[in-house]
Image 1 (cartoon, one colour):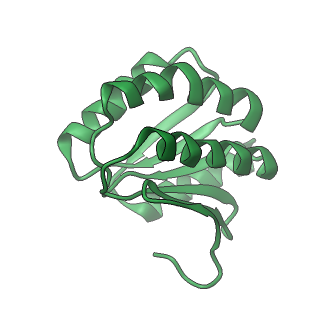
Image 2 (cartoon, one colour; image 1 turned 30 degrees about the vertical axis):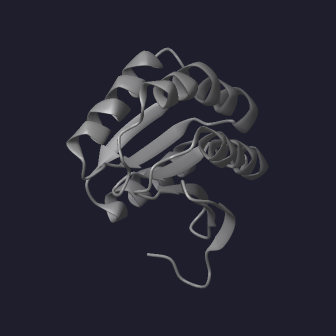
Image 3 (cartoon, one colour; image 1 turned 135 degrees about the vertical axis):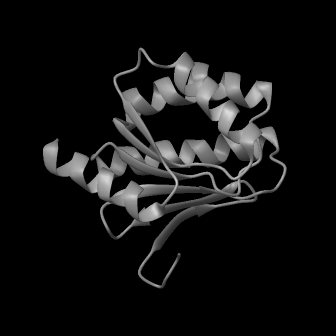
Length: 141
């Protein structure tokens, strides 16, 4: 739930990137069809925000997300995640799972393909649990 204290870092048709006042970056996907250039720009802004924040924590809200296309999966696996781990310091991802079962499966395929990267993903049905886990990672890290 967005309120006036949230700092929108970037927004386009793909979704919204927020510098969350609770202390982490937040990526929220929209349900719209994604165009490659917009998708790449969106994720590039996530990387930049994470590099600026430096805490390695990202809340990924996929509740409204449509499934990744094969090209999107390849891009995330081969380019975005490795770059965001290296340049953005991405270490902890709390994923609020998609309502669409095919979106869930596409995300699971991505996570399986990048399991050698030095990062941890956890899946959550409830936003409050995802936030609590991320905040716990920050205290531990």
